[in-house]
Image (cartoon, rainbow, N blue to C red):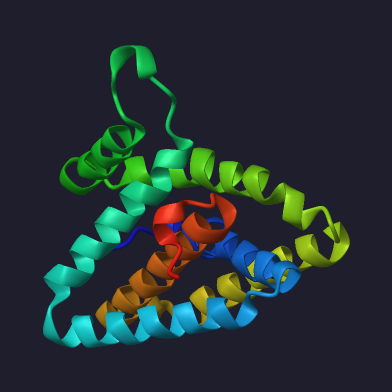
Length: 183
């Protein structure tokens, strides 16, 4: 069961940060790639939700570890790779307390995401910040109007597809990770 405070954090703060992908795509002429990536991951998530949720969950966890490593401190002197820290964060959240992940998302990941993407947002701040605010308000309205959405397993699995797409797009275009370039 998801707590009411988590519903508000999800719809008002966490989910809307993905809108920066659209801002970036519009500025860099990658909108069709972003839409195709979202379509592919959503279709795959729908299929896996019906046939093999374990694979969907594993891909979701791996991409989350990849994505969250950008927020982790650098402990090179201790030889601790960032992906180990992001994996530990997820492991503690899954096996110990989900509040860890919600706090991390609200207090560190989302603000850091906006800081990293500020170079794209600032090109047209009024329009782009307005887009984030309108999208946040829309998600809050939807969450309040259709509370069953927070309990829907299929919608939860489909949101994993959107998040996977968000990570893949960010790795390729924002963080420019060459492992995500397909020739």
